[in-house]
Length: 266
Image 1 (cartoon, rainbow, N blue to C red):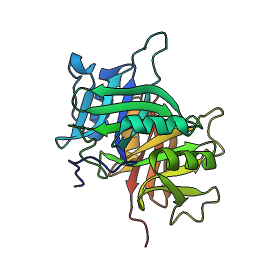
Image 2 (cartoon, rainbow, N blue to C red; image 1 turned 30 degrees about the horizontal axis):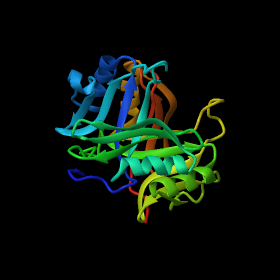
Image 3 (cartoon, helix red, strand yellow; image 1 turned 180 degrees about the horizontal axis):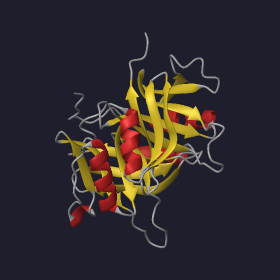
Image 4 (cartoon, rainbow, N blue to C red; image 1 turned 45 degrees about the vertical axis):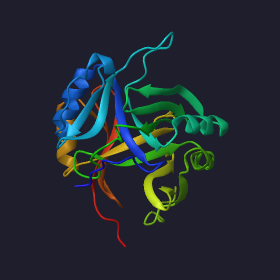
């Protein structure tokens, strides 16, 4: 299985976590859906839970907490990108039109983190690894398999991520028939995610956002289980070039996708 024990290459998605109003309910839902293990963490870590799959870290879940005079954040998944210098990345983000939402902070001896928004409003995180490199297992059933930017301005987003994070944009091979255009996000020539313009038909007012995909063995069975546990199906299972997928929400409203991937044709 694809395992990682060393820091990810800068610009690569390396971790995802969920901010939830009811942390325990979120843990119950996702451990049941994907076979993860996880308990509310110690107080010194703010109760943060590192969920595991086959004893490897796979995703985080934390309780939403209001900070200063700001309201508690929404229930949402966040994609984190690897960096060797979070402070330098923060400065590059600001210099290229992004907005720092949570300044660089130390997370014990595990690493440094920050949260920002790109110029189109999509929120993401940055992780500088020390003792904790990020996801220890990816690209298999129950684990993260894809990160996708849905943006209101492709050109502005492409320029920003190239300048701030070293992530390049190019047409996705195999998606040339998609009239709206689907793009690959690459780091040193290796595809690390996707980008598309917000599609017609999405709910009015939908902001630019990063969508995460979890791999599953059977999309229809997973969606049925999600529905039975109080989740919402936003787009029922359908077949597309990369496999069979569905767009869903957990019971607290966090959107994500599930996909049974198939190899791209050469």
